[in-house]
Length: 279
Image (cartoon, rainbow, N blue to C red; front, side, top):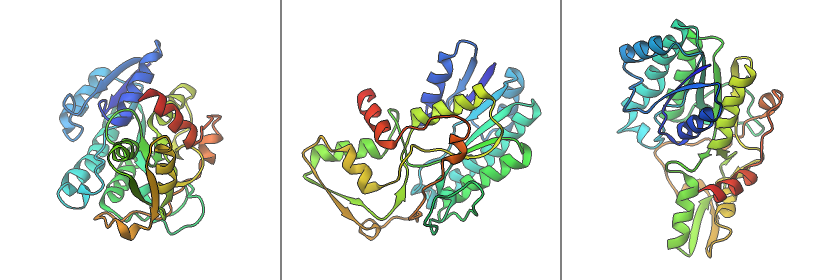
């Protein structure tokens, strides 16, 4: 089995590559953004044609949500929409199966119960709009592609909320954290595990929602992150931290479709505990 991985040096990509390489029956071809520019159609088609992969795990993405509103707007659309179209066309040309990682930010957060894969999308920010456009491009060329929406991703590699909180806890006595945005944290290792499970079990294509189990606010998440530190965590509402990119207040996604595949999803507290041991 030939596995082709984009974004190999990213927070998620590094875990996906490491996990894929553990399976000795896989031939893993992974590419960092310096090794393969996913917005270069000729380069992508040439590489995909040369390797003839069975699966493409598309982890490359532009993820700076704030910058995507202005300075990074063009790059956000170029990578998340155009790059995804190029990858999906290339996959279709060699009949490869594709996994694309999307986001909870495709929703506007006005719902007060779990978002299902069938719910109407209405992104509030440029990042969410571009990722949704990426989903649509992929469905255009590969109707059977696997699109996995995820949320609040953290892991050992790269910058994320967990590292930010741990670093701030060492410098400050008090941390003010937003307590009116609800979602589900996702451990990159667990998302990578579901992606490889999808490959191994050859799960049916379509839209999936994946995060760790149980709901939290950023305040809940922060409290758990720094519980061993000598710091007080104070809940505040979103108005205390004005941001360029509007976030959905409620983006808790239903995990029922993933659970129906037989994949066991750990809680976010369990995931955080494992992260703390691995970091």
